Image (cartoon, rainbow, N blue to C red; front, side, top):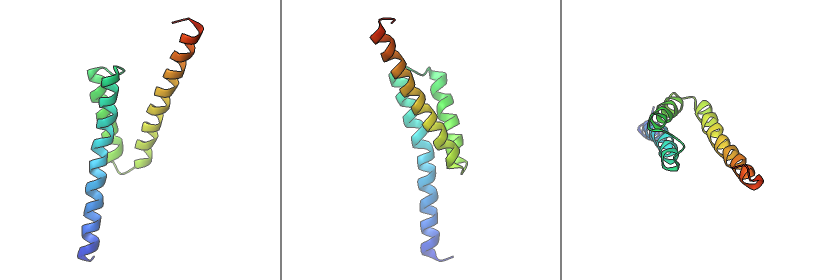
Length: 88
């Protein structure tokens, strides 16, 4: 292995670890700010998100993030529909 390829590989690993921390952190803080997550929910979201993204299987972590985002949108749509019908 050359020095350049070793440096590129270690940079990639650092970036991967940084993203594994930042993505769950941003999503859990966003949930806390919106009031949709309790403090224990914030910690759980961060731990599960970090664990799923740092394990090397990014597909699982991305699937969880997608599920979270779709669920958030569905909740907004349901609330909007209930408001339109005067049921809320």
